[in-house]
Image (cartoon, rainbow, N blue to C red; front, side, top):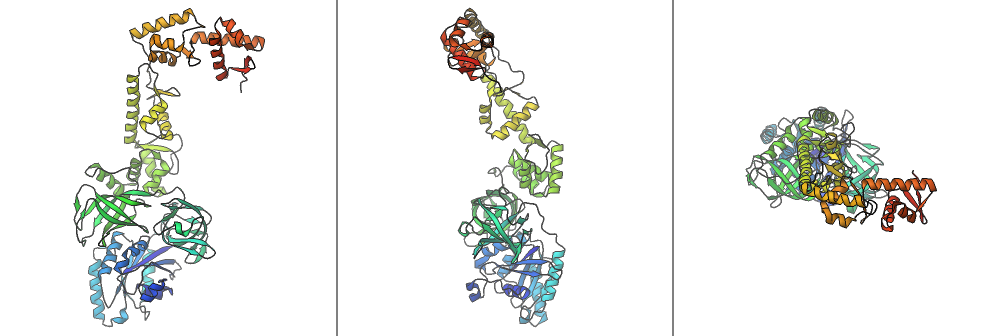
Length: 633
């Protein structure tokens, strides 16, 4: 199913032509009918002789309503450029033609209307010559010119035949299973509630499925679908679609919003694009200039950042970055238009190359244009790699979604990039285009790998008496999400780049070593433990003897075991005491604190600290004043 749109100067007969073709007059507003001038978008449909049903979007031709026109032409498959025989090419003819060219509308016909007002064939030939000159350097340079009179019906059959032939040569819209409906009309229908309309692209919609309205993120459900006033269970890409939405009021939706499946699109306020300034533009475009940005059915104000230049001359092209006042939904490959806010003028347009750039570009960084060129002109593998590069670490499915590649090209590109090491999987699993597996481009992996190792080594130098850097501290320094951090560590451990001690991370082979002065202090402390193994010096005494860092190192090395904030034992003495307690309980069924105190020849302080510690780690369990062995699950 395809959609065509009209274009042309005001009062050149666009709406009358649509009525003659379809029997439906597209002007629905009373003001339009009274003024006999299209103000808002109008809609109709037509069944071609071969049975294909096409939608028609009729746009206003008056210069005051050019921005309404832009909301309707973004999703069309072909254009009917309408030129009245009695007037020929006029200012809005040229502006609409420039817009069709900037949007690269893939096909079109030129309709010479009102031929009944020009009986002289020589005059019609002259007008056609003028038209050919006007379209010479545009997408319509080879478009057939069809002479028509909506009043007498002459030429309508030829127009329909040409339109059918034109559309038969163009492929149908692809179904990428990522539907989006730029909303060009919102209204309430009695008995149904909220209805939105637009031209569906990139995927299909089905009755009953959940949707969201972006950029606001409002959640709803599809109650019903219509195409050309016929109820449908499934709307296909390229169709003019009316969606009856439940759960969202009309006052919450506006023209330019996008209906999509939840989670498939993310609004953005920043875009990278290729921009062409029209050769007829009244002046140059300057860096930092304020512009009106049009994409899909939306419009917003933005700031134009010229990359690599301070100004752009009419007729020239440049890479730009747009900073938008309000978020929009757009993707790589979308065509857009820029206009001057005041006085109103179409400046130019182009194609979006990156719809989620990771930040503001340095304007004179030579690597930026190369990256954007790869996204715009590269092979599928280059496009997928640049999409991944812009996301740093991301899931495969998110990278594919950002790349805008179809499934076949994306699958081949993914296989190529992983095969040659340009994309590195960070998680286990089969890397398919729909997989939620994290991958990272090789340059980012090298940087992430080196930074992690440098942080661990720096920590070892700063704290040589610690086993390693705490995991949480390392995650904080790397500024990574838990999932990415865990995937990173898993990869580094698998590569033997680091050693994981559960809550600590270290370089392989790292050992705690005391210098001569520290070792001497440790020996003095150990003799104090040997003298009173079950009533040893307390934590504060140990710290005063050897220093806090050395004491903590002895804990980490496993030579000392802290059973409370105040009590610590040598590991060998701790193991001996635990064995004695277990043996006593196995022999007698239980043991009391006093019995442990007497058995170990220690004081109540040490016996109580040890027993409470064993309770806490699940070796013993308290029953009144006694302890029994804890039941193991």
